[in-house]
Image (cartoon, rainbow, N blue to C red; front, side):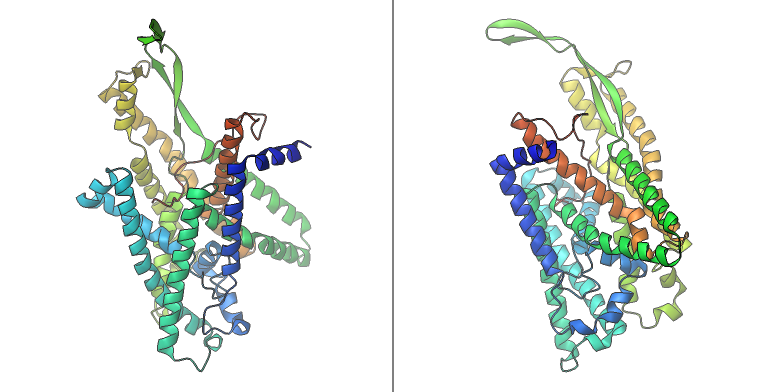
Length: 450
């Protein structure tokens, strides 16, 4: 009864209702688009593409695209080219003064950076689209209609894939602006969840054949433990006590005292969220893209073989190191100890036992560095968890849900969406979604403004 009452309260808020309907409508359009096959492709002859798209690193691409990659859909490349372009623009803001200036110009600078991101998305999608054309011909040439010229097929496929990615990007931005939660993250989560039912059924069937139903139960229990650990990682914070000095203010013609209260400065254990994994995966996808242009790479290049196999030691070791490095990089990008110290000083706040100003900045920076290390290491282990699980004979498609960005995105997006809905409820004087306290979302997810 409480569930139905809460749903009625949610539905009674007109703005929230319209945002939810818009979000569901755009998500439905996205899911329908993943089943629309590219022009020049025979849908009935995609068996080889489907089977190969579920293995290796291409299986991760297919997972993020919600199965559209294996189905040769107009959304086959999904939102990942936009993520890659966003990463490149963020790196440019660190290296090029012009982009640094744009980043500091507020809303106008953010809009201009978004335009550069969109233009770069077109370039990245065109490059990956060319690789996808080669992949289709190598994987299953029979799927390409024989009466279509190779040049016409290549051009039409690249243009269609680019338009598809830009349309998905537009839908993500619309969800962020007028829907519920972060649109880009939500689209990625929907694509991941779309693969979950079939993956869990495949794993269950495989365990039934092998006579190991109990092992399947253990797998599900371990998955629940991993989800719980990810929630702790996302919501874990180090609270630093902050004392605000008393000061006299004039209010209503009377002299009153304000301040003198103790509050806490929450520093997240994983301030960067899932972005380090997305950064690292965008880089790890490059060998798979380049490999499509090299005929017989699986016979001639051991480097490309290792970096196209998500179970190889070279892949996972490089992946782990990249995640730890990107965790520190992205945390430094979004958490500014200097600004935090200045804000505290401006508001007559101080950390007990620490002098305001430079000493406060150094103290906050030291705390962030200490708590980021265990967060980065744990994030790295979560990322390589699928490869570890596969060592215990778990089905590849189901193993991808035990770690990596898939589990963190699903947990994080759900928490963010629930936190947004709860904010609307509390602003209308309703009770929150839980009786144990407010739901905490997470920071640092992929945003439309990256």
